[in-house]
Image 1 (cartoon, rainbow, N blue to C red):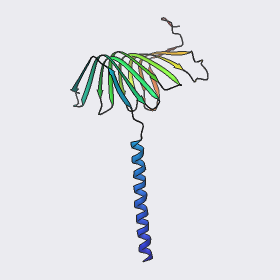
Image 2: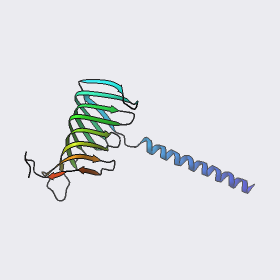
Image 3: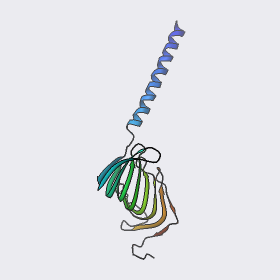
Image 4: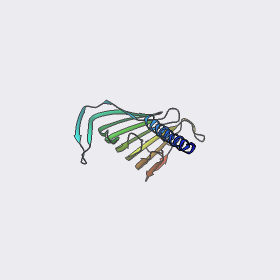
Length: 178
């Protein structure tokens, strides 16, 4: 009888432990930081299917939207934006200006021709880009210093790692920097 009681107790303990672990994993998914995409302005909106069959929302004409995730606030303006809500993918084209701010640390402004971005992880690729960044909490630079990078490609992954292709860096904001 004692062995059977030990087995039942062990079985109940393992069952309870498994249920507890599943509950905590589910909670972490429920409370994971989510992005909020808000379209503030567009002259035209339409729905269509992508080439691979996904539903797209197409915004055109003076498009202005924001993406917020935690303390990161991103604004994007462009002539055209395609948004796939199912995959959290945004494609912007023509006259793109993207500003990213994460509170007191930095403000980054990018201008370019095309942008492909995952609105959930905030990783993406920007073509033919000019980046201007003010760094507020830098040890080596004053808060008035602006870093300017021009590059064929700007890419950022979900960890925040940034990669440039054929880039030029300057701290001179003149029309013809030195």
